Length: 143
Image (tube, rainbow, N blue to C red; front, side, top):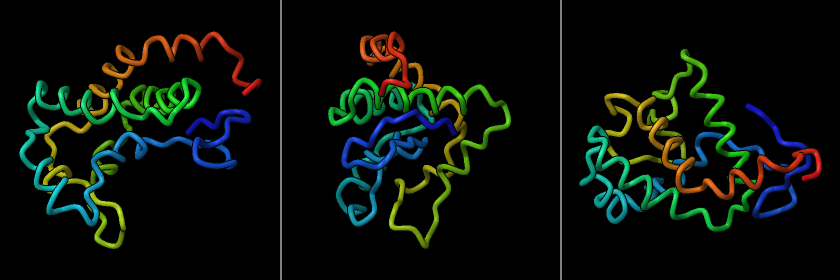
């Protein structure tokens, strides 16, 4: 994954090193299985229209704590993964019973995880267009 020069995390002074897991944060149901988990289970992640609506609701309209530079760095990681035809998007969705992070039930059985992440990419490019263009016009070494 690509590391940005000097970009610090939005919540502290550590270097910002985004991963694809950052896109999944709003869907973490650990210790919220009975609330958020139940609600997210009503969404069909194999239906492109429902998937897009959920992405817009929980990703593109959120992340207000991320600056335009953080958004740009995060999208760059996703673009890099999507450019790799062998990238295993399924592995990101796999349930790890030892983790304190959990996605909704059955998300690890999503029919086409690459399509899910491609939808995220397409929608963030649309919805974050101004922020991404602003960051692209800057030299990341100045961050």
